[in-house]
Length: 232
Image (cartoon, rainbow, N blue to C red; front, side, top):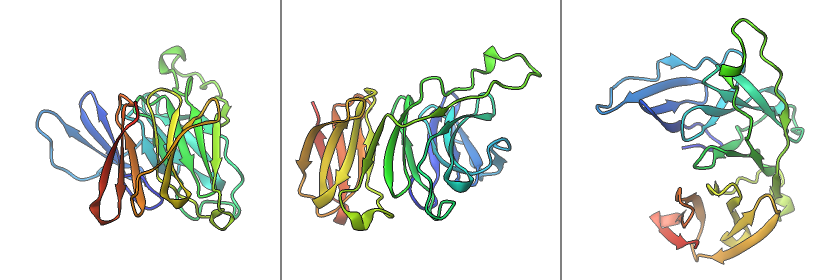
């Protein structure tokens, strides 16, 4: 549900399911019976105003697009932005479209694509650590994370509007992304190395996903075609 346009980010929590709209309004579905209701609770993002891009699978962290192209990691456990993600300077001072962002299945990495670059970040230490800061004290400043992997379009004409489908594997390394001619590549992000490339004969790859165990990839194409691929 995440994309360059409006969408709802979803996460599974201990209490059920959490959904957050880009403007920060959220809704919780409690288990075992899913409660009906609207998105009527505002996320406590006063310290980090912006648009929610994606939630990690546990519902603790969110990526938030802020003014002038800035992207922050917001920690719901301590209700504040804990880390900034280093981003290239936007051409027009702020996002014309929301970036596309997603987390790996374990929430340990995040990927952000603003139409120019696709950047992967290692989120080790990005949580606020609410338990290690005494009440009433000013939170310690958090650093700016630089990407561990960056990918750009091979086509100069796409330099300002390149939004390829992508997915992060749970192994802390793999990135699956659509490339020119609808080929799909698997990259080892820390090594900046191409691991595999395939032509799955889909007329247009519209979305990619990887199973939490990292063994199976799924690709969606035009005309409701879906392909499953054994990555092992």
